[in-house]
Image 1 (cartoon, one colour):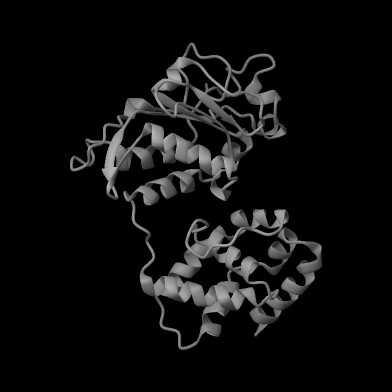
Image 2 (cartoon, rainbow, N blue to C red):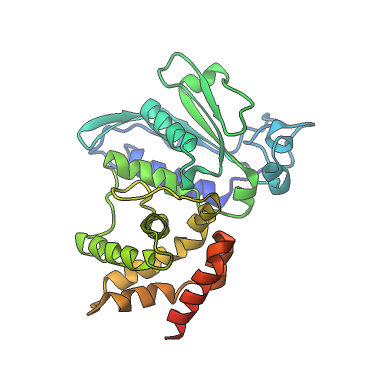
Length: 293
């Protein structure tokens, strides 16, 4: 039977934790458990709310992308979010503003939104729109006037990839979650960014490495990735976040100690494989040298 995958259940839990009035009575939120759905009802056939047992012939959620064909399992690959309203950060936020914010991140190809295939939503409560990464469709049925639908490429669900970062970033942006880095940690990360940038002499790429690693690609001072093949570093460098948090809490007397600790958790070969060939050997050699020091 079609099942709800753990990574989408985690997104559901995150949203309910911060937007459900029963769990936080001090906030004017009304997102209820029944309004955040993953698996379609028993009569539902076809589409991303269905797993392999419920898809239909030429199902668009399977045939239009190799990512979906290769990722088809019994897992559903969609999330519905119902209406809510919450006051935070000096403003009022609701399903419409949440939906348009998410669509803007998808359209901008934000690293934490690249597994989303489509968003069906209403920006005003009167018109239904659809953002489709594949450019196939532009609208949906009227039920999306009061709920927003997210479809995820099936291969990302099959891989168990964490889908919470985009939604956690939204909650942080509106003021419901706080950045977990202290000012001291942030200053130390900036020093590490500067030192990493010396690997290839270009500040933008050096900063992008760490901004992606700590989930702060939208933070002040962040630079866009200047080469398309570097985007895969977003996945590879997420493991750095834990190392950086640990390092930030330790007392180092010099920055080289910090950078050596960060690099010790990385594979030079994996980084070299993700960047342009002209840089791969240089970076791998430099990292290997530092790791051996």
